[in-house]
Image (cartoon, rainbow, N blue to C red; front, side, top):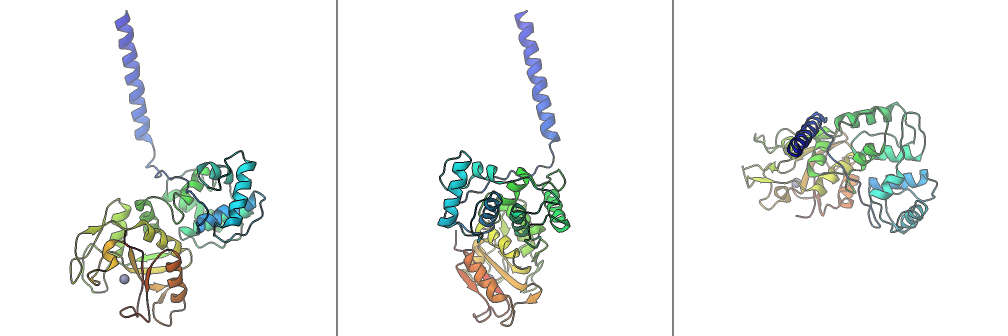
Length: 321
Ligand SMILES: [Zn+2]
């Protein structure tokens, strides 16, 4: 009797386990798991801008400038105290959860402005006007569809988390960032090298390989060293942020033949050949602001027209890892 009973228990456990397996298999292609970004004094960028808009929406008075300074810090601590959180000025999962609001078509407020800033990070180019109209709706639907988030145009906690996703820049893992770049209508990725040499180290192939979780290939002609390199997330985040201000065309990442010690081969450099449809030259109206933005995003080697060998492209390189 005892034995029969334990056999029954085993059968029951197995059945439940199988059910668990089946339901696990039935789960959708799976939105990659995003985490809330952690923001604190000294941080800047679109996630800070969104946080400031959300605080405004919650009735707090502060300047929305994308910079987490002492003024923002004071307001964050007030918000945390009012919501029963530790007033440490660090905006992590607990604070984000209290801060975000569920939004849908028809909303018109500062929280929508925060949402529009996030969507622009992914290249949707929306006017940040606080009105959740057709343009914002289309962007939300597209963003959610690409990440297998159901539920129409409603923006709830999961979508907010996916939007703000993990870092102060674009968010997410290396592969997620690359997927965002791959899918952006604002970032063109060359499928050949300026040299005309054909290999698997073109900008598009570099980004596709990275989005698939792999390393980017380097060219092996001229002075290029061959082999592979993992693209740096600082650069990928920078590329996403740049696309919220301009559409642009990438002519080189880890491939092509540069100087033998070029940062391109370390996965931290990107070359841009045109901005808003205008070829890079000394008379390009966007090149100066574009270069400044690269520098403000952490690039420490920014070259372009006026610099030797860079009359036709901008080179933004982050420090070597
Ligand atoms: Zn370069």
